[in-house]
Amino acid sequence: MKKYDLNDSEKELVKVIKYNQLLSEDNANNAQELNVSLEKSISEAQAALERAENYVSIEHDVSIPKILNTFNYKHDNDINTWDELLNEANEYIPNDVSFEDILTAEEFLSAYRRLDEINAQFAKKTKFQKVDWLFLVTAIALQCVRQYIVDPWLKKSRPAAGSTDEGKIKGKAEPGWYHVETENILANRVPFDTQVYGAAGTIQGFLKGGDHRMMTLGHDPLLGWFFGTANILTNTLTRLNLISAHIKCMPTKRAPLGENVIHSLADTTKVFTSVKSRLFDEGWDGKLALGCSLVREAIHLKSDIGTKRSLPLPAVSSISPEFAKKLAAYGIDTASVATEIGLSVLINTLISMVHRLFYDESTDDPKLFEVRTRKILLYSNTIASTSNVIASVLLKNPKILDIGGLIVTIMRLFSDIRFITRVKQEFVQSALDAHFQGIVDELEQMYKTEPKTSS
Image 1 (cartoon, one colour):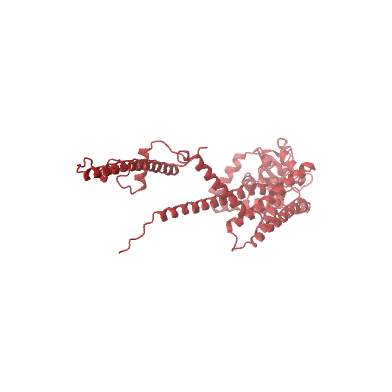
Image 2 (spheres, rainbow, N blue to C red):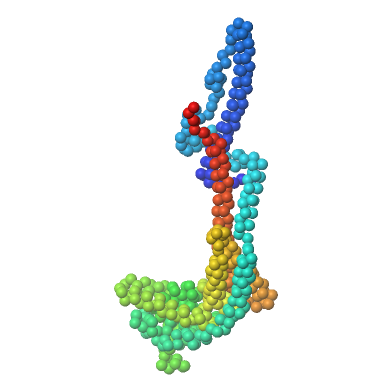
């Protein structure tokens, strides 16, 4: 038999059980010896009586109390608390005790058979009924329609960047260094959207290597809240390698009146020390400036996320810009993944809500019914995601890959399996508790003394 990992309280309980088992065996042996002695004494008494009838004196003391006093019984003193019993058990058994020391092989097999019976009962109570199969097929169909029809249509219907990317915002960068006036923060264009270079030769090619959204930390849906906000507050642009540049408004060939250009290198450390100084040293105006910068970052991310190019996946571009560009070419970006996640969760929610309408209080247990609901969602998401991955591989078309749905499926694998396992454990424990309570009731009934009636 295998060993079991027991916590301290379980080890104490098992040791006390083993201690009582040993005491019971000792008492049984003592009782057997007592029975033999009593039979011997009775025989001697009968022989003595026969001799007495023949006027022979009795030479043997056959007093039963004396016989009983010849045996050493355990628990001569009453034990009133658990600690007293545990201390006595530790003195009697100094080593740890396991289940194997208490149960026989046959008892183990009997326990496993009982556990198998309970597991079979759980499986029977949570197996799919006809209506559940209908919901499963419907859920799979809806997920597939979303993957191959709705999601591609939504991608194609996105507007181009120019039509929504802050078209009404014309504010230019200011002449100061590491500072933007508070009243201009919401009116200016964000500095990390700049792709035009100034005359300084040392700054040429600052964003060389890819799309500016993939190369600037201000466009990251996660890191942008930190770096983008700091850039907006200081009129700077920070690249993926943490090198920053000043953004200035200067005349160019295509804009003689001036436009934002990448002017010269900036100190990234000073970008953030300036933000800190603005927040803690400039009173209410500094705090308001930081708040406006956060709002400005949110406005810009919102304007970019719904466009055809959208935004890269969070933190992916900071790890590998080329990989982020490749994903974007396949239509895998923040907007597409977020849409896939949202629609997948919406379908799961609708299926769950409608399935709940079939709950019958008179016949269904609420937790076991929820197990059936979660099995429908788990199976449908798993089947839909698996078929989508297989289809994208066979067709050699990564554009149909449903990343958002795959994320939802993985989350459901963890949450639903954990829930089902917990409900199953509760079901098994409840059945075992009922079984043992029946044994306790039977024992109490066996040893229950009837009240004496007066004659």
